[in-house]
Structure formats: structure tokens, C-alpha cells
Image (tube, rainbow, N blue to C red):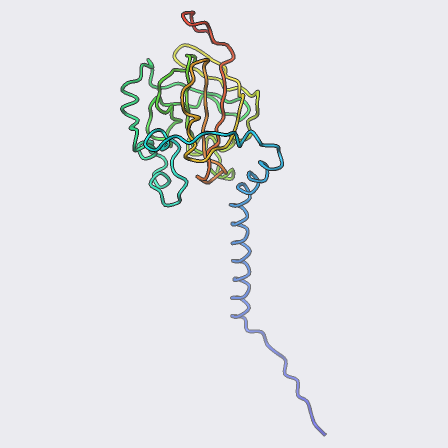
Length: 252
């Protein structure tokens, strides 16, 4: 008659601890991946589901060595991405200092407010260099309120890291603007109000959006999208609500 012997298995505490920690680490890893990827995925999905055809407005590519360096490169290893805070590294073929020296704008800074995004009196440097300290009015040829175009660049990041008072994150929620929203500008002793009339996304080399137009007074805000990436550029175009006839005194 055969006999069976049952031996109770005693779990190895060390192995159980290692197994538990591995599952915890895996869970945290997936959580961080989702935390990082969600804003990117939600932005891309919203473009498809929210009728963002305007985000794909046709924009011609500017010839090499013109202004096609203005928006930087989307290549992960590019110098523009590694040194994204310094304007001088964004636009090596068209030095900012030269444009600033030739500018006739009578002040070095002005301020913008975007009520919908709770941005109040954000400083804009006319021909500035450091995007971590202020927004930048790039290649300043026209002042706010004048006929022409004012292009303002600002940083964005993952929404989880957003701080309205931090210039490295200030334009994170720029995609939340809509047609008809207002942008307020205080420049010199004047106040102006612009109204958003178009929003679209372009590739880094599609920069004809920066070419000046002189039939009205325009203000263009630009940042990187999806949030936390350098893949594409969101362009928000606005127009001054009231523009005096040439020779007439400017009014807010």
C-alpha cells in the first residue's frame, strides 16, 4: 500500500517581496506613461472629433534660409529642441538682434491678457531672447495697434505641469481658445482688444503665417502642440476690433 506525504509549502518572503515590488513598479510605470501620454492623445483625438478642419489650413512652406527656421525643428535631436528657451538658437539664420536694432517700436516691453485662460498682464519682450522669462515679440516690425502683424511666441508643456505665472508653461492651454475670444494688449499708454478669428496647426517648416499683412492690425500667438511636444505649432490669429484710418490717432 503506497503512502502519500504532503508537505506544506512555505512561501519565500524574499521572493514575495520582490514580486510585489515588481508589480508595484510596473503599475507606477504604466501610470506615469498614461499621465504623460494622455494630453497628447486627447489633443490628437480632439482634432479629429471636434471638427478641427481649421487646424489644417493650407500654409505654404517658405524657402530655405528665409523664415523657415522661425518655428524651430521638430527633430528630437535638433539644436532648436535642445536649446528651445533661447531665441538665438531657434532662429540661427536670421539673428534676432539685427531685427531688434532696426525696429522703430518706441518701447521694449508690452503686456497681454487673455481672460478665457486667466492670463493677466503677461510680459512680452520686443525682440527678447529668453522665453523662460517672458513671451517674445519675434522680429518686431509693427507695434500693437499699428497696421501690420505682431507675432508672439510662448512656451507650453504638459497640463499637469501648468502654472499660469511660469513663462515656460504659460501657453499650455492656448488650444482652449475659440473663434471670437478676446486678447487684450497694453502697449505704451494705449490699450487694445483683439478678437480671435482663426486657429490652425502647422508643421515647423510651414511658416508663411509669420509673413506680415498690412491691411489691418493683427496679433498672432504661437506655441508647440500637442502639449509637451515640439511636433507641430498651434497658430492663433486675432485682429484688432477697432483700427483707425491712417493718420488718425490710435484708440484703445
